[in-house]
Length: 100
View (tube, rainbow, N blue to C red):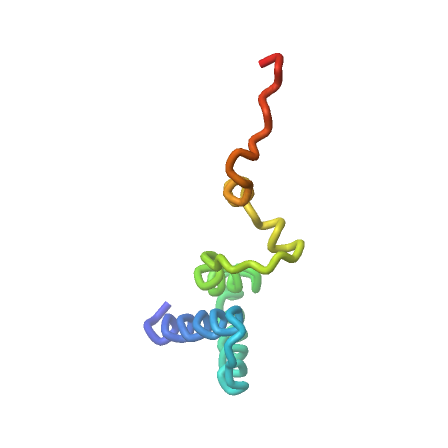
């Protein structure tokens, strides 16, 4: 990807972060991002990549470290076992089996 393409992806990621944080984004910026994503998808399809591949590549770096999940079923399902263990109160540990 050339430097201009990289700058466009950075702009799209910034818009995604703003939206994910419930910040106001202008309609012009959203429309520019929409057109850019469509152009990237069209170009990527020439190399055998799907729209999902492009969306993953563009948005994952911007959204993967997002820690302020809501508590909807989707966000809860994304929790890892480590996250669940951190939420458990100290001392709330299952007692070991008497046979162990």
